[in-house]
Amino acid sequence: MNYSEVLNITPGNAICYSGFREGQQPGGVYPSYNQVKEDLFILQKHWKYLRLYDCDEHTDTVLKVIKDEGLDFKVMLGAYINAEMNNHGCPWGGNYSEEALIQNKAKNKYQIEKLIHIANLYPEIIMSLSAGNEACVDWTDHYVPVESVINYVRMIKKGAKQPVTFCENYLPWLNKLKPLVDEVDFISIHTYPVWEYKNIHEALEYTKQNYYAVADTYPDKPVVITEAGWTTYSNGRGICPSNVSEDYQSIYYNDLVNWSAKNVILTFVFEAFDESWKGSDEALEPEKHWGLFKVDRTPKLVMKKHFYKNYDLLNKK
Image (cartoon, rainbow, N blue to C red):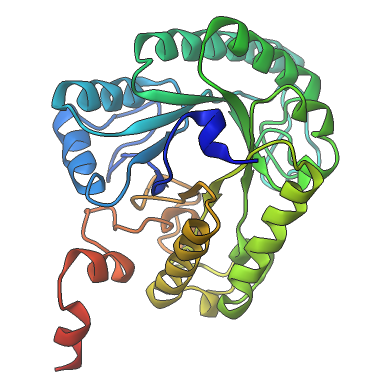
């Protein structure tokens, strides 16, 4: 089933955007209006659809910039939902006190209510809504039962007019998320070949396998890829350092975008800019380096080829 009918949009390039720069992070210092404006002026050259993850101060600024500057973006907006039960299988946390879990449920309800409120404030900009992100996969540190996600989806559909989804790794859609399929308007999957120990020569084929495993299981439900990308550095934890580079990112990006366009698949590339606040304090932490642009907004190799005419010719001299 074609996503454009459900989302009421035309095919176009899509990207995940989080604008936190050096010294900034969620809950701390947020990007300013002018910083977000600079980012969006960069992104508007190549992308029409943005994915935002949270109903926080950053999202408020992004939507204000889009509206005030008259930028031609449509936004998929998500609510960040916190753990509602412990996940002992998470290798980096996932265990909380009973009191914390109770507080998280209240926070999640507030997040969903805020998502609905923002969606109704910007109906011309926000094209779709997500009830959460990676909250049901086995390794998550913010595990939320499927039953809760279903309730959040129903709350959103009752309070807002935009199509509703839930963003998750491809695998849970094949098992534990089956009860959610009938509730959402479209399915959103994440696919990361490099996290699954695939090399660059296997990458696109693996992405195809992930996508069609879900799409073929639910032929009457549109499937959107809401995260797919390739990091450019690794400290060796989870990703082999020899498997990442700007060259490999460029190859995967171009293969992914070309395949998505040819097959009319909406794919949000992860992500626009590097984010130094993510992951561990180690400089080569892979979570910090998924951006197509560095944290100082200079383009990586894949974007140099788009931003600088005759780039390949210049580098052959």
